[in-house]
Length: 78
Image (cartoon, rainbow, N blue to C red; front, side, top):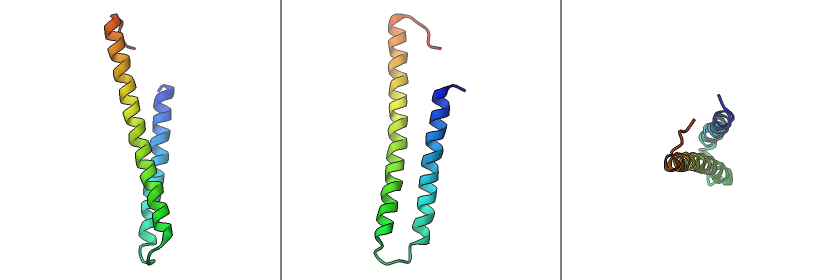
């Protein structure tokens, strides 16, 4: 395992905790009428989802660019 894989797993683990924990908090507070807490929790869940998908998109774009550059120069990727 390289450092990038460890960072990726750690990032996904944190996002998973935020999403699952937030969903559980939303479920527990569903009976409170017009609770501002639900909006805050939903914001954190949305931020975590956006961050994870942003990280994944950036990682894929970087790898595609590296692969394209190495093919253009005739080098093999590790």
